[in-house]
Image (cartoon, rainbow, N blue to C red; front, side, top):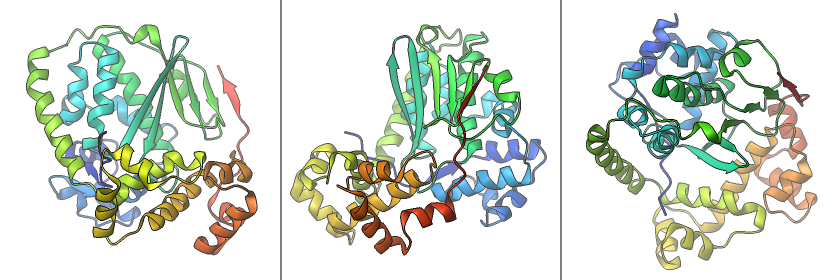
Length: 344
């Protein structure tokens, strides 16, 4: 099984040029995000997920334009994409392109695209593997709009999703319906882009097998090297978060998921100055913050999803680590519960 990527996000120069094009000086965005004002001058700026989210929040604050993420995608130059994204435009068809984006996206950010398919619908969700808070709305818009725009530009056809579901309240403007061309559901339990399975086989006229044969091995090698350098603690916490709802995850199961022996895993955790119990507590804390940040998730449900047997056990553990009860933390950090509705 592939190792999880480290908490590092690469910001290519093309991103800052795009920001300048829409009228925002990169230095001003960085200052608003409380990051070094010269970060954009480096060949490849490296930031954590939290810092990456701070940049997106700064964009939203400096330019409170509805659907700014969609505008950025529409104005982006396809040729300016890094090779890890450019390979998608050279793919055989839409399905192949989405698969390549999901595989190589981690070379830029620790964002994982999850796919599932059922009854003619293809579901896409995004998971930030090191996030301790919900991703900013503009980041969601960028991901979903890019995946749709990829299909449109590469097939030469105006493809439309079957439906888009967003956790935020709305509608804020008509741009979403206009761009996606499908029903938009607000106040949903998760952010999900739902494509039509029938569109996934549409061929890409620009398919270039020769260039793919050159680029793919190099990208695969870079991905393997990146994964090999990632922290074992980060990898363990990712698998722990996925298994919390089924009870208290065991070291043996995580070792099996990571494809190593219990002894090897225990040794590597110790080498990083941690214990398995500490990583489990951190995973619960980080996942708990994520779940509580979604106001539509009931606190009893949060306790269950974190593997606690009852609400009181969850309250005690959370208060010991945070100094606040889950309800108090939600009041300070949460949002109003949105009323979900579907816009056609």
